Amino acid sequence: DSGVTQTPKHLITATGQRVTLRCSPRSGDLSVYWYQQSLDQGLQFLIQYYNGEERAKGNILERFSAQQFPDLHSELNLSSLELGDSALYFCASSGGLAGEDTQYFGPGTRLTVL
Amino acid sequence: AQSVTQLDSQVPVFEEAPVELRCNYSSSVSVYLFWYVQYPNQGLQLLLKYLSGSTLVKGINGFEAEFNKSQTSFHLRKPSVHISDTAEYFCAVSPGSYQKVTFGIGTKLQVIP
Image 1 (cartoon, rainbow over the protein chains, first blue to last red):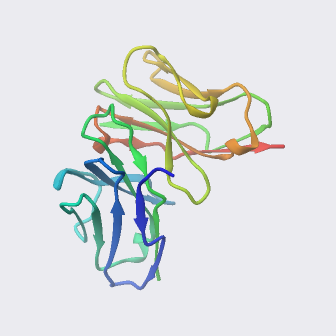
Image 2: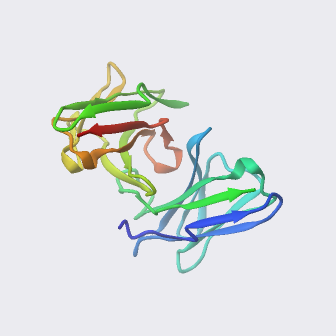
């Protein structure tokens, strides 16, 4: 158990809909990262927050957005969903910003868009 | 720009045999290198990382990796595998901060009894 929790575990929805994925980092970790894992594109970094502020953006679509709340949990919002958005979405957390910090991954949310 | 190439998509190996999973990278700057393991239906777990210093890095579960700057490689090795090592392994590179990490496509290790 990494200490990072993600809800829900599975999500099935239809094209055009909007969903919210939730992540709670390990106790004390200030950085939260979101990743997408799909069969055709592999693992891709989406976005990072540190102590409530956006720090870096990766290959995140404009239809997707995220935020980190004062209690440090984070939400990833996916809107106008398309079939190609079906993937595993992972959240990870680390203590700070440095590469020296170990990153801990949650179990993921599997999103299926029908 | 940086990239990671995992040369083998699948590696079958008999139990108690040694294994090497290959990883090559390219980058225009100094890098941090990582190996992660993903068990079925689970998230990623860090096996080991190279930040600086000794080029031989020891990780969890008996794995080790050697950073070779001249060959731009970071191959993962284990002298004797166990059934429980069956999983997918990802090599990753970053210029020093996790947000710019690039992952390889993964290598599926299948340990045969």
